Each structure stands twice: as structure tokens, then as C-alpha cells.
Length: 96
Image (cartoon, rainbow, N blue to C red; front, side, top):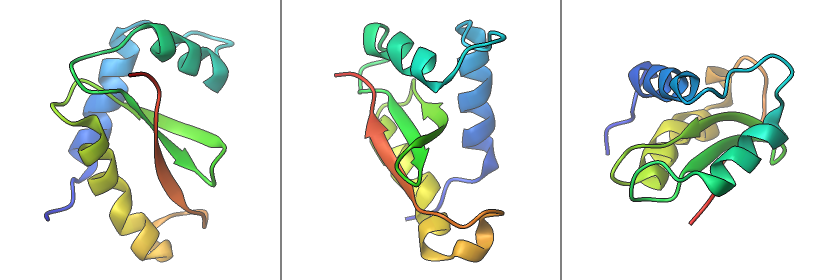
């Protein structure tokens, strides 16, 4: 399986910004509440989490958001030197 490179990250961030989530003072709980009530696309939207608690970004709008997330985090979990700060990455559904 070919890893997804930076392009997917940029698309996810731009798409998130277009939904009005980049608001001064918003935190990860605000983002999680938004996605709990607003599903984007047909598959569940996914949070990319670091160390189980830090919501780094949201994957949404793909045919299979979970598969995209898993491809994105796999290289970082296999080789910690790819990450600036060590940690483990996971994919967490935000809605159904």
C-alpha cells in the first residue's frame, strides 16, 4: 500500500478551514463537537490523534476516511524519526 504524502494533509486542513472551523479561541473539543453533529461525506469522519489525546487534524470527505487516516499515520508509527516530537498516532471516528 502506497503511503499518502503531504497532499492529503493539505487537503484535509483546507477543507476544514472551508467549514468555518478555524475560529480564534476554538479548541479540539469544539472541533469534535462540530463533527459529532456534522458528518462530511458517506464515511465517518476521522480524527488523527497523537498520544491518544492530541487532536492533530481531521480526515473527511474521502470515500473511506479511516483508510486514508491509517495510510497517513502508518509511516510515523513505524519510524518515529519521521516525527519532530516522538509519539504514537491513531485514527479515531468522530461520528457515524
